[in-house]
Length: 314
Image: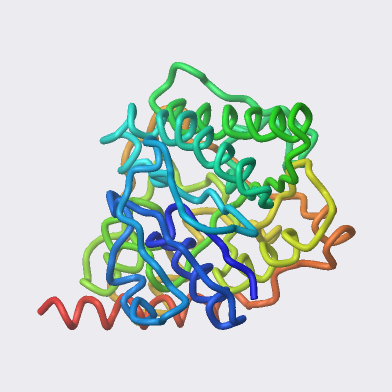
């Protein structure tokens, strides 16, 4: 039985990780100030004797009694809606929060695992994106607060690995979806599903020709567990290499929900990535990992989750 600390553990991905470690028989300490997470996400296992919730902002010093085997740093606003509203907090979580989490892992001699993002590639000029691509990021644009926070977090993690010999992992997460996403998250999956279920027009940006690839949460969690077990310290992409346009994705959501919604087009936000497709060769070779859940199956589970949320709100 391991003891694992997860920052951002009440968030979408973090709560699924808490649940997976608890099912494995581990002890889990969740550190979250629920600024973008939700206590509802962890309600099902909050009474588990092997689970503890610490209500704290990770930009402040993290003090945890007793040993830790792993520190997983997943705290951060992750949607444009959040980091546009909280730009300075986003930068602080990526810098001060990462520093605090690394310091804790060092003090406890624990494995440190950083949740990075495909956004470190910015609006990429190569396709698909490999880990050795340095990216095309506008550091002073509105999205730069998130992109550069994650790029700094990666640099800090590698510095701790090289200078202190800390046992580290870095995952670059591409678009991941599933139950426990927020309806007002602002990203394409919850936006489209909520709009379709309400019979509202689906809002696409630009001409809808920009591409995205979608990985179901269960696949990502499985990949994270495998990366934790690997002796590899450089970044690893995790996502679904199957790419589709936002317009085609909108049509798929309308089809699966049985909605009569139309599609509306709005101006493209500044620095919005035009392509997003992971090269997962490294994950395949190192971890024997690739996504297994078909898009329609994952979307049906996600649609039912949002449908239940909407019905409960009525």
